[in-house]
Image 1: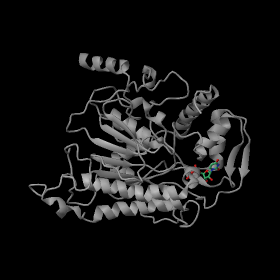
Image 2 (image 1 turned 45 degrees about the horizontal axis):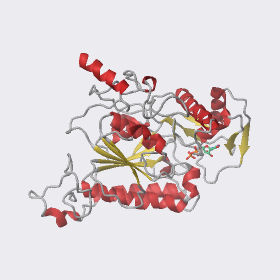
Image 3 (image 1 turned 45 degrees about the vertical axis):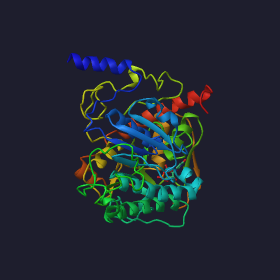
Image 4 (image 1 turned 135 degrees about the vertical axis):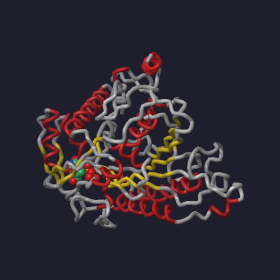
Length: 428
Ligand code: UDP
C-alpha cells in the first residue's frame, strides 16, 4: 500500500500524466499515424498511459501539436512531422493508421491530397507493416456505406457510394484502403524468399519484440514475414468530443460554436437526415484554452483521479491495473487491435437523431437564444446513418456508454474554453 501511495504522489508531482509501468515483454512499440489529430491524440493518450512506447506521425494538415504536447519529452513518446504519402522506415509492433482529413470540408478542400493520403499513404503503412511484421489497424469509416439503402448498417452491407461525387475522394479512398488491407492480408509477401537466408531457422519475426535499428527498411534483416499482414479494420461512425478542430466544419462543432456565439445554427436541408454520435474518449487530459491546465504540468484536477469501472479512466499511476476494453471509441479501437477479429467492425453509437433534433438539443444544453437557419442541402448527403454494433458487442465486448448529453456537455465546456482562449489573443 505504501508503495502505491508513493506512486500516486509521484504521479501528481511529475510533469507528465500518469503512465503505467509495463514490463519489456508487455510494452509495445506503437505507431499512430494522424496521432496529433482529434481521435489520434486521444488514442495516443490511452496508449501512453497504458505504458507503451508511442510514435506519433502527423503532417499537421488537420492535426495540431498542442493535442499531444503534454507528452513531448517523455521517454516513451516521439512526435515526427511526416506525411504518410512518403515512405517511413521505423521499427514498430503495431500501427494505428488514422492519418487522413476526416470532416467533409477538410477532405473536400484538396480531394487529390485526400485520395493520395488514403491510397499511397495506406500502401506505405501496409508496406511498413509487412516489412517489420507489425499488425495494422485501419481507421475506416461509416462513409464506406455511402448514402445507405440498408438501415442500420451492418458490416456485410456493401454500400451505396457515388464514385464521382464530392465525397468520393474520402469514401472511395477509404474503400480502396480497406481493399488494400485485405490484399496485404491474403497475399503472401514476396520478400520471404529474398530474405529467408538472413534467418537461421527461416521463421519470420511475426510477433514479439524485434531488434532495434533496422527501421523496417526494405532488405533489412527484419524484412521477413511468412504470413500476410495482420490487419484490423474499424468502421468509425460519427464521433465528437474535445480537441475537435474549431474549423472542423462537422455538425457538432458547428452547432456548439454557433450556439455559444449566439449565431444561427446552420441546418443543411430540412434537418430530417439522421446521424448517431459517439463520444471520443472519457479522459480529461487535454489543454483547454488559457486555463491552468498546462500540458507540461497538468494540475491534479485534470488528471484521472480514481477508478471508474463504467468509464474506464486509468485508475492511478504505475499500479499495473489495466483499463478494460469497453466504453468509448478509443477503447473500441484498442480492443479491436488486440482482438483476433480481422474482418471490419463498426464502432459507433446506435442512438439515432435527426439533425434538427441535434440542433435543438445543443441549443438547449448551451442555453442559447440562437435561431435555427435552414440552408441548402449538401450534395450526396447520406440521409440516414446508424451503426449496427452487434458484432463489436459480441466479438469485442464493446459498446459506447457515455450518454449523448453528458458527452455534449463536455464538448460544450471544451469549446467554451477555446473561445475564451481565442478572445484573450493567446491562440489563433
Ligand atoms: N450539417 C448541418 N449543418 C452543419 C454541418 C453539417 O446540417 O453546419 C449536416 C450535414 O449536412 C449532415 C450532418 O449534419 O447531414 C452530419 O454532417 P457532418 O459534416 O458532421 O458529418 P457526415 O456525417 O456528413 O460525415
